[in-house]
Amino acid sequence: MKKFFVSLVLSLCGPSLAMAYIIPTRTILQKTAENAGSGIYAIEQEVQFSNGEETVAVKETWLIDSDRTMRLTVTGAKDLQNSFKLQYIYNGGQKWSMTNNNRASSKVPDDFLEKFLNFRNPEIFANTLAHFKMIPASAFQKKPVGKTGADFKNEPESWVRYSRTGGVVNYALGIPTPVDQEQNYPGIWIEQDQFVVRKLRLPSQVEMSANNYNQFARGLSYPRARTIRWGNNTVTIRLISASARPQTAVNLFQPSSLDANLKWDGINSLPAKDVITEFYTRFR
Image 1 (cartoon, rainbow, N blue to C red):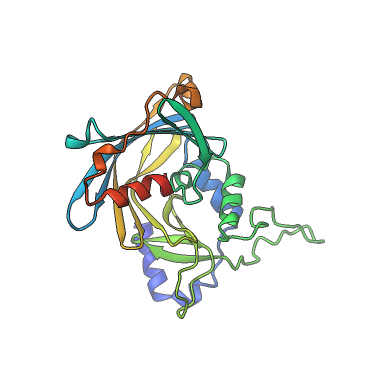
Image 2 (cartoon, rainbow, N blue to C red):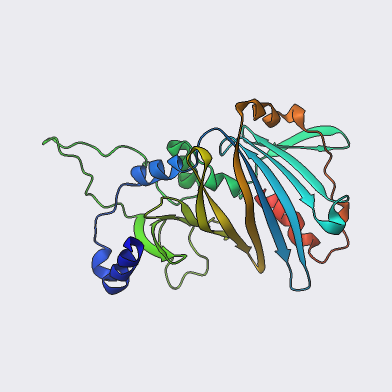
């Protein structure tokens, strides 16, 4: 009922509500980071690639400790089961993999999307958004205190506004795209009530939407459905399970724990090959 009321007010009083008080960016990011949970999680999800000719599904198994510490194993379904397997470790800004039994690393891609659902440190969250020019570098600083002892919490932040997406009211962080602009400006949409990421747009124009959030162990909120779009490509993600793991799993985030070579052969003859390859080299 609360969501319906807010949505109704937005639709009827859009111009006047734009002047309404919005909580500071610092508070928005702190509350959102709290919903990323604590400890290590295992996330299993199905990823579907479609290029109009066929739909290919693969399974992703993530181990996640934070936005910078993750492990991903990708396996093919049905005919791809024995011919397609990827394994990556993300640690300290590096993406590790193994080819011909040799471990090697490269910088984590700038368009790495998974971190935006797993920021547990709000200051790192803010620094990342500033890097993508969604908010100014000073946005996370505490509001200054005036001579009278009152802070400036009511001073508006020009980069935050109310916006609806996914059927809910969000805090939209980022400059609105002018009507005559060819490319959309980057931004992130955080749901007003639940403080979860509902939409993301990076400077590269890749967009991610996240819906149907559920609560899991240790305070984790995670979406059951996501859509990723770039160019003419659309990839859908369906959550299978999310569960807490013991702290002993921390050893699996070390590059030395990689035990499988990258295996791409299974997709070589598929029409969706280029989409799958770009997805796992650019967004993962």
